Image (cartoon, rainbow over the protein chains, first blue to last red):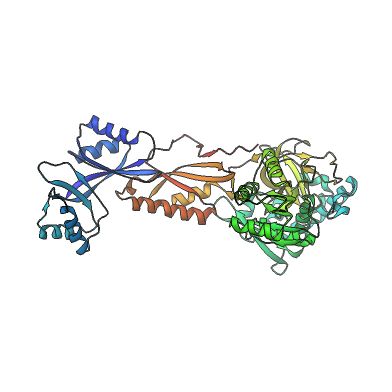
Length: 133
Length: 435
């Protein structure tokens, strides 16, 4: 499991920029970012090199945020690799709320996903020979 | 048909005054005997019913406020027995409790007379088809105009509110000549009519309308009259007194004829409560002169208006009331529904996922009132999934719909976003331009 930070953003000009500026001043490096949005608000999800520090500074700057764990895995960089894993998870009855990729070293793709059954998901991944981060 | 009740609507000033005096004297005796809150108020200032000898003594009587009705919720203000009462209506009060109004058969009858007078002023007669698209229910608009139409001998079409396509079909098929609705809904109907290719005069036979339950402008009146080719009359009323028809415009639109043989108006200073000279703007105060279910003495409506006693070319001799230009409290009227910010606040306070830091935005978009409530999320409400935050919003939205009877757009913002202010905060922005 790895940690990500979720930040609530009103749909207002410059809000993502404001958030990144806080991280810049805190000296925190971003590894990945994903945004879900509606017409009125969005949730920015991100991974950083120092989540605790990022959370501390974002909260101090008035952002509403929380640390939320994700199941993270290495997926071989070839066609169909992700599909096979997702099918296996589905067969085991593991639901995925959302997923996104993040930067990592080496040949493989790095994917993090949110599920309400992380233990079960990790068991399925281990059985399928997928490397968990 | 020129008048519905010519002998009452055109009586001489002296006769009117004599009738008002006689009715006030007996109403004061009646309330002293039958309504404990009034007996207590009068005893407190050592005023005896016999001290009121005519309408000129009305200023001696104590005021009644919405809080008096709230404190006696639900039936403490009723003067009539359960056997005598035949109907209840209600409107919203500040704290979520309702303001209840009770009517005897006689009260419904008087109210219907007044609504019929307004319908005639808008051009109705015994052969009219009156399309009522005010809501039917605790709100007095629908049933008030309905009973007025029947009293007149016209044909009432109880279409009630909503379902615009059906409203258009009924208007076209039944060929109603008179319509009753809020002015903003009238404009919305006109737009939908044009979209549907229905032409006033050819497909729509309307010639007059009673439009009320919300503030509107002379520009809106001109627009409704031009686009529909009708006479658009303003109509005023409130459930505490009776309902629509307390006053209404005649064809000359020189101010609304106040049915002052039944409901006596005064204008007082909002701060000092001293009566103001004729023509000056202030708070409208109404005394019911012959109501038996729930008479009200000098009821403070909180509506800001002015009176006019100059003669009207129509021949009616009632006093007239200028357009309502505001409120002396913070009540909002949204799509005809009374909404108090305190009702909104109490709903927000009950929800642990939001904080009671909020701002209310009211606007009029395409001639329909819109209500937006911007509220801060509670810091603990943070979630990384959209569905959880959406659920907070949809739950609040449903609570508002049931709590204030108006659909509100809920906008969630981060904690600390809404400006804090010392003392009385400015929590409402009303962008509707109504003067």
